[in-house]
Structures are given as C-alpha cells and as structure tokens.
Image (cartoon, one colour):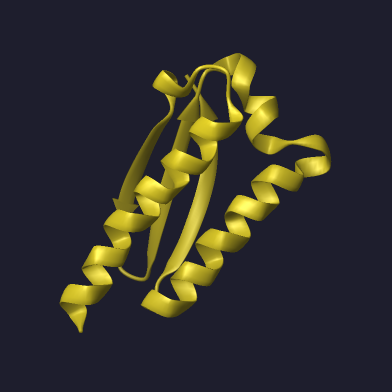
Length: 88
C-alpha cells in the first residue's frame, strides 16, 4: 500500500505541471519542486513573473481550483499538501 501512495506523490507533481502549463504563456518556465516533511508535502510552483497572474486567476479562482485538487489527492494519500506559487 505504501508503494501505491509513493506513486501518487509523483503523479501530483506532474499533474500540477500539466495544468499550469496549459494556463501560462511560458510553459517551459513552469517548475514544481516537492519538499517532503513529516506530515506534509510542500509543492513550490515557480512560473515566469508575467505568468503569475494567469496561474492565480481573477479573484484567485485558478489557484483555488488547483489547491482543491491537491487537497483532494492529499485526502486519498493521507498527506497534507501545501501549494506555494513563486515567480522566477
């Protein structure tokens, strides 16, 4: 069972990359870094400075949607995921 949960960890990083690349003008600059903690996993999403607004969306709608997906997957894998949006 732990082996299956590990596969989900890899999938969530790739899923976020695919979703965000579909939203931005510079998909080649999308980088997701996964930092494992004891009880949680921090997912740092870095995008080009002019793409930050596209990722966040009006009133934060895109960021909220991505965070909801991450939270739902976390419930299944019994981990708490935190998404941080950075610019680089």
